[in-house]
Length: 435
Image (cartoon, rainbow, N blue to C red; front, top):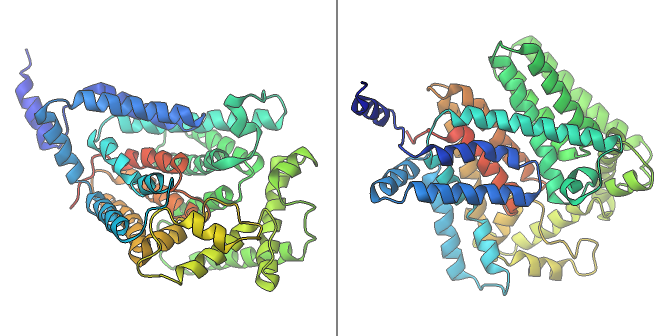
């Protein structure tokens, strides 16, 4: 009969915990919940936290979990953001009915620590497979909707109607999922044909059906990172890079010369003009070029291009108090007063996390956010030289997704985005310790 003691000692030497399997099994399934109604993801997170608490109900288990959390490379940067939030809460007034929710938005990364406390294990590869399964299901639903056969019920609303942050998140997940598939296709030789077909299937759904400018551009960036991972400034690499840049500039110039689409709203393009996803994406890309050009000349925007107005107004307010900011939860009231009578007056978020952190927490706030992102990239770089090297690129791509999406969306302010990103971050980060 095998003596279990040596096995337990060996596990301890490798930093493995002794949690029961249930939290790991739930955590492995969480990526799949991201592709359905937001309540499914929240329900999955609740079940995970409940299972985690039950599995750590002894003092010894709590101590092991605390040690694992404290060893995370993100522990100090996230703790610094928490302390900064508390200090700013003491300095600035608290807006009525806004402060509590706004304060919690800045603590989204705290959810990551229970996920990381589970430790490394077979659940990580299962989680990747469930994430791929989710992207395939989402792609199929997008295709069915484009064919007009997907029932227009609440459960499928984010697929049948392009509106709200959930629709944007689905497109971002397709972009990230396709890039992860390409990475695994490059690393693993088994089932190469099926991996290639899955990548094409998801990529086509993103480009042809998802209608998202941000996600489509993100997909190009992530694929570019994979292609250029060994960039060494050779002449042919520089030539290809130059050709891509020239083609991009030529494309923007060509779009600027084209007539403006009749409407720039995705919903109107679909409902009134019955355009397909690819046509909507092209038209929205043309609209973006026109909006930037026209805003630079006249400072006038359309409903679809109001982000430019929001960015300018928010930046002007930041300049009033750049060091200490205006306080947590104070953006909404300040912006509505600033933008009174303008098209963006009723907006509830600046659609840019860097500007939001800068406005509410000041210079240290936006620097804290950047430190967290850069720490993730540094960890990924260090993982290349460790036993976690296969997951290093996964961490890079999630981080780039967050950094890029934060330019155009409330990627951390909104739980729809933030909790999804924490779940995906846990997959490559679990088991990685601070050096």
